[in-house]
Image 1 (cartoon, one colour):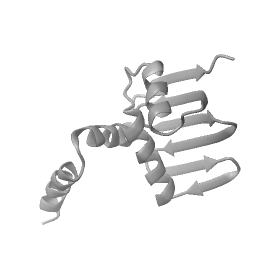
Image 2 (image 1 turned 90 degrees about the vertical axis):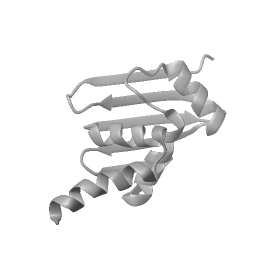
Image 3 (image 1 turned 60 degrees about the horizontal axis):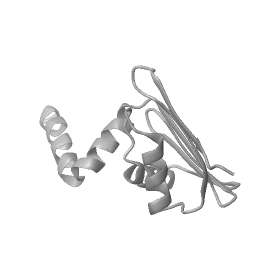
Length: 126
C-alpha cells in the first residue's frame, strides 16, 4: 500500500500544475539554494530557498518564513520562468511587465543539485 501511495502522489502533483509551473516547481525541488534580490523604486525584496524546505521572503525590513514565503517564491518563479539557460534581459523584462515596473536592480543566485552556481545580475543604467 505504501508503494502504491508513493506512485500515485507524483501523478496527482503533475495534474495539479500546468506544464510551466510544474517545470519551475521541479527545478526548485532539485535546487540546493536560490537567492533572488530585487530593488524596485527604493524598496528591496529578497526571496530565499534552501533545500530541502526552508523559505524566506523579505520586503524592506519585514521577514516572512514558512508557507507564506514558499507561496511568494512560487509566485516569483511563475513570473520569472527561471531556467539555467535564462537570459537576464528576459528575466528583467518579465519582472518589469508583471510586478516591478520601476526595477532598479536584479540579482539571482541559483545552485543546482550538482552544486553548480548560476548567477544573473542586472543594474538599471542611470
